[in-house]
Length: 345
Image (cartoon, rainbow, N blue to C red; front, top):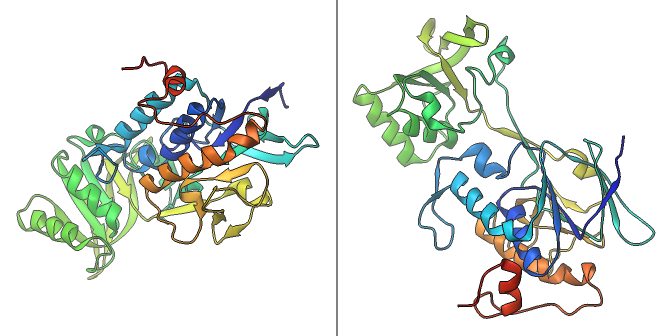
């Protein structure tokens, strides 16, 4: 059932870092936004995949976590009073006779806006579930596909499965907290950064963790709580490992969902845009961040910030066709400072 239509200047699809900065850039220009995200909070990949891991390439921030970056961006956008709709997903999108877009969500919300900005990251990330019988019964209790709070693993008997960067990164991060930590990988070779592999092997040599070559065979436990896992050893035989927290890192699958059905031009799994405006092939729809592609594209957060700023200025006349854009610097422009709610210094 669709409720009353919500009229707004812009609908932003995605509340990751680039979606949040899009709200800020549009807000500076006086454009109001509603933001829709299928996760239960803002932050996108940053809060899903590495909320407590450091990021080192954000301008002026030598080091910050994904959660810290998200919190700052939420605060930065707050003067413009965006409305967030979490745990929801855009299902349908079509252009009306008046040139505005009608946006319908899975929760039954309906929006009408002249501007739609797709800032959906790389789409919805779904962890690859390992082929272990009965694993669903333990998920979110003692089997985890992401680490949202490292402290939750303090004094746990942790088993991490995988040989890529995510597995090795969390081995190094959680080893000091865990009561015991074992890394299970199906072969001797790793796909992770060589430095991470060497640091892991040094911990093994020092007796601070174990490395077992093999694959998880079965889970032992009850009522969603693991007590142990069995490992089919590559050398033959089987070993039982004490375990009350299992972290399988087998990678993520990208699901574009309804986005793939809206008539946008894709290049592989990315929306093709004009790099001078970040406009898509559909009038009034723009795309920024990891979801878009163009010649020379760099998949970096800082690149997405640039894209959001350029897009906002290019899209201004879609929303305000008869108005003059307020340009200038936030350090000197009194109108921009008024919109931000700060006094001129």
